[in-house]
Length: 185
Image 1 (cartoon, rainbow, N blue to C red):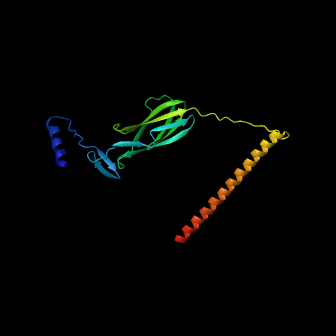
Image 2: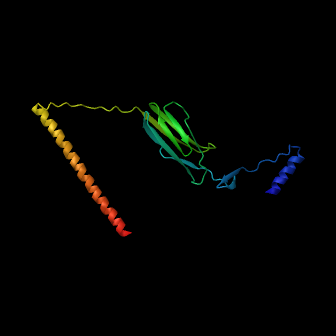
């Protein structure tokens, strides 16, 4: 290698060039070991945690991206090619926080640092659903209203007791499993 550099340096001097030695290989470092461009592991694929995401306005979510092969450099660039204002992104290397700003659909592009490998995630932002509530007024003095009110109270009490019984059953099963685990050790 040193002989090749010396020969190239000598040729530059003979041709009247400035004497600058041409760069033959780029250096990369992996775990504090120098690698050359020919030895570098290149990203062949980017795998986002999802390819399609649906958010409500004001909602946020994180998208993760992994590279293949696993030992390839993980410098990822997150961008909005169209910048429609539908979403805002906050990239942080291997993951990105996505915030739904307004109704619509927009794509997020994930690139490697050199731009040779990319992936796209489609994000749809919807308006939040309206929660409709109904209010009921019961007149306890009326016989019909009183029956409906009593029925509703009884249903609540029955559901509460069933939930309580189921919780007690789960606690008992958990205690049994825990005791068996201690006996095996």
